Image (tube, rainbow, N blue to C red; front, top):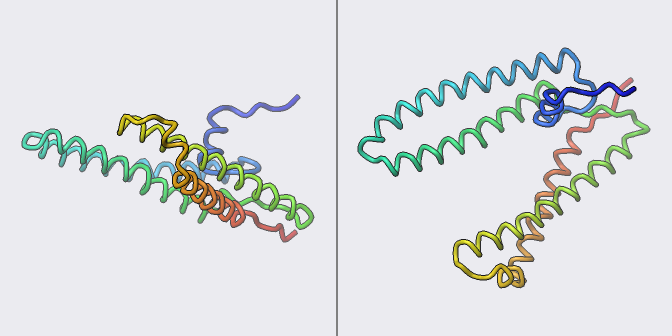
Length: 177
């Protein structure tokens, strides 16, 4: 009978990009990286809330939008960049394969890069149509039928798929044993 992995572990593995066994070392590193990110965010939000409270009395609406924008930027770009760099330095997301399985692993990464690119390109194409429809009250069909938007979505898909392939390919390491 297959041992079911708890949902918490599945989420951690997906979030940090951990492949293979989730042993004590990886758990310790995940806890260390997560604690560092939490402590940094805690201090950031403490200072950001204090500054927002000061400016909220004079500029309530502008303060709200600036506060939301800066918090999104810090949460998405700064913290996620830290998580990626820290997990890469501690070798949490390295995929070790034997020399015989190296070509198979490269093909798997290529396939996942192509699928990620297709998914991203199609999503951006229809998201652009939706945004155009909402903002300009035009029909979604008028956006979809423009060749310019199709070409832009194709380039987005190629770029994103290539980027995901490069990241996946850099994570594959040959075992030296």
